[in-house]
Length: 492
Ligand SMILES: [Zn+2]
Image (cartoon, rainbow, N blue to C red):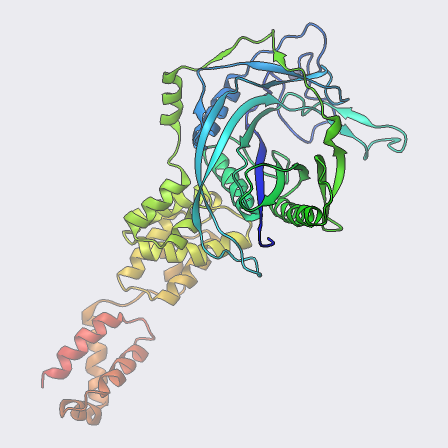
């Protein structure tokens, strides 16, 4: 950013709550069906149809709110947000206005500026104020292509109408595009973590908008802000914000007026372009929804939801660092996804070796999972099986390279560690009576070297180890070989 300027960015994220049915009716929340297949009089907005609140939408909303540090309000009120659009048959959206479901959130995220290659420079904690997360229904979709005569007609598909959303609104606390980027990634991960939302931007079940303005450093007032919409990925969002910051600074410096407007990210030309002016902004004429009672949430309910939630990723990362002595970077990588974190914890406990478990998971296992587009939850090698392999390695029965080879084979053919070790002939001979025999033979066939060693040439020890290993075809346990050799060579 140009010196002397700062950006002021606020974020609005719509997260689709992962319910099986819609927020005010029993229609399925599903994609891929025939247009308007998942509809009923309520979500079609037919006269006289009455909405009934889906309890699971409230439960998932509560999980989402708590995972973002928000306070769930004792009473929230659904309100009608009036506007006309073909994909909104009622002529209003049921949302919440001055009494939202949750408010006053304080969320700590980790954020880092990036170098020219896009690598994080230094992760630092940052506290964000989340003003609110309210519950609302989604609208349907207007379809302009892929159907007959689409050069002449547009279509309306109401399958999405009535899908439950949580709209998460922050204070204008972000100062750089990367902070906004790290925030959205944080939200995405944490909502997935607590099973509140699939939070997949590509599938449209997490949508974000950024409000961006700039001002000279030290200025307390806000200039006109631009709303950025239709951001299909976190990376496009970051680029759009970055472009917008530079565009607005240049405009202010040239003495031009920055208009309050909505802009889109134009991926082809790498720039934002105007969608509509905000000067004709809607007055939504919110008023309380007469068909729904105020939503009352008791402290007991909040406690029950809290008790059912898993440990959150940041807490888990800190615990992995304290309990298993992982580095910040390794622990952070381990909590990128809940199934991976759970996998690690099981393997660490079951193997009794958290450090080596982390090494195998972060290198070998993740590589194999990525190659197969799998998650830790669907890994062909269970954490218990990996732990068995690590214990075998710890006992010295196989070496590190062999263990890696065994893991790849376990992964490819869904076999146990023991099976692969025996197939590959990696089983080490630790039986000292067998090794003693080999050592005796070796001593018999190398009398000159043995005499030289006994006369003080200790460098020959390595040679003897080599001979014994060779005679055992590499299967002798090196620890036992060393012990037996020392004992036999010292006794004349
Ligand atoms: Zn319906």
